Structure formats: C-alpha cells, structure tokens
Length: 416
Image (cartoon, one colour):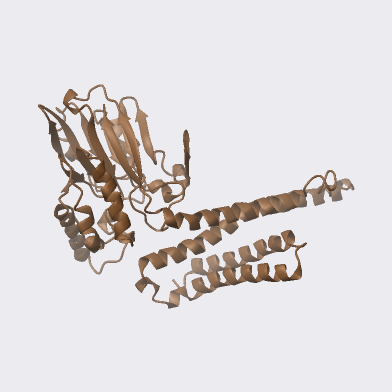
C-alpha cells in the first residue's frame, strides 16, 4: 500500500482540498478578532494535518492488529472529514465559477458586473451566502456521521401486512420476523445486541427468517454471540440463508482449503444456533391441513462483483405444487434479474444486503439513500403485479460503525 500511486494521489488530493477549504475559512472569518482567528485556524490545521499524518504513517503501522471498532471509527472520522470538505467545496466551486464568469463578462463588456449586493446592507453577498452554505452543508454531513455512531444498536421494529389472493386460509395471520445482515464481526456491545433479540422474541412470531451475512468474513466472529442468537426460537423454526460476506471472499486465506473449511464451519454454526440453513433447497411449512413452500438459496447477485453461488432452479424444483411460495435470497437485485421474469409463481421474496447504506433519510411518504442509485430495490416493500419483495435494512453494520437516518431493522410481516 505504501508504494501505491493511488495512495499518494489520495494524500495529494486531501492536501489540496484542505488548502482550498482554508481559503474559504479565512474569507468567512475575516471580520473576527485576532484571537478568534488564531483559535479557528489552529483547530482547522490541527485536525487536517492529524488526518493526513495518520494516513501517511498508516502503511508503516500494524494497524490491522488493533480492535476493529477502533479501526472503523478512525476511518469513519477521516472519511467523514474528507467527504464533508468535498460537499462544502461544491458550493465554493459554484461561487468561484460564478465570480469567474462575472469577471470575464465585465472584461468583455467593459461594464461593472461586480454586483455582489443589489442593495448594500439589505442583501447578503452571494459569495458569503454560498460560502456559509458550503460550510453548513459540510459540517452537517460530518456532524450527522458522528451522531450516527450512537444509532447502531437502536433496533427499529417495522410492521407490514401483506395481502395475497392465493394465500391458504390456514396461513391468514401468519407472522414472520425477518432479519438480515447480522455482521457479528462488527459488534462490540453484547448487551445491546441482546436487546434486539429480546425485541424479536416479544413479537412471538410463527417463524423467523434470516437472509444472510451472519459474519463479516470469518466463522469465528460468531464465538461471542452464540449465546445471544441461539435464543431465537419460533414454533415453526428459524431458517437462514448465506449472504455474500459469509463465503470469506473479502479476506486473505493461506489456501483454498482454509477458505473452504471456514465456510463449512459457518454452516455448522447455523446448526448449532438451532437454525435450518437452506442451501439451494426448499422446505414445507404446515399450518393446520395446509402447506406452503419456503425456498432458500445461496447468495445470487446481479451486480458484476458479486458471485452467483445460488441455484434457484435446483431450489425451486419440487415446490411447483405448493399454492404459495416464499423465497429467501440475500441480494435484492436477484428479484428483477431472475425471480420476476423466470419464476412468477414465487409470491414473496425476502432480501437484505444493502443496509440502506446505513445513511439516508426516511420520513412518512419519502425515503432516500445514496444506495438507491445502485440498487433499484434497497429498503422496504416493493410490488410488481402479484409478486412482492421486502428488503430488510439490516440488523448489524459493517464498515461505518453507525447509522444515520436508516436504523437497524427487525421486520414483522403478517400474511393476510
């Protein structure tokens, strides 16, 4: 990493960005007193230089040996600073372009286009306005990321009734708790995680369905959380599938055999929890005299970087005669890519994977996250014709150790 051209380009860009933003800091603080300026400038450069020095010496440190929560928090702070300055610089750049155009127009037309104020004393300078707007936007982004550190265990119960014309009468009122993306390797507070499990148990679901990513990379990440998640019980059982992180594709292995052994160990972990792991297969769920099919496949993603381990053809085979079918598939891109066009008899698909990017805005009638520009279906309920997809926002977290606007989710689905 230390010899990577990208690394040095990134450092150079961060340094130039710091210098650019500092010019605006000086501009908006020009009327402040000398002492206030000294404090402001010192604080700005102390933070900026500390971030640059940390990245500069990082290749020479054994940083991977530090606790994961410390690593992720430091990187989140540095990334937050960087993106906050990027956001602020967009406003600054707009103002620079505006003033540049005015200057050129003034030279060409031999007229006074300075016009920073329409009426001196009554209208704020456009440069001052855009500069402050940029500072507020950047500070708001950074502040929200810092605030989000405290949201990672604030489990939100989302309830949804799903109506299907072909649902067997015995399954009317059937309650499913759907969770996804536990990512146990990111947890640092067992009691907080336990409170989420207690919320699930209070719902008294008929069945619990988990749609993948139990760990970040390694099966051993579950060691400290076996006694937490083995408490999950339901009358019709707990069923699970694998997500993209469960295969160990994002970490280094000494051999293919070591990687394969890790996956086999993870499969056993599901069993030791009392969960039935569905590997490209289906099971029947019976209530009274009626039955439905529950299908579970390995990870299958339509995005190029995600391998297609799942085999829906194999999993679906034999379920044709069941009047109602539920599919557990980790990646929501599977729905449009294969499920809807090729398997119209699958009534409900449950997925996770996106986490809602752990960042966004959700208010009644509106939800937004940057992840929606990558995934068409990224959180909540989607319907096409008679088929439905529910995308869980994730129980855990990965990378950024927090959540902003998109809280960890426990989904309660009632079939009606």
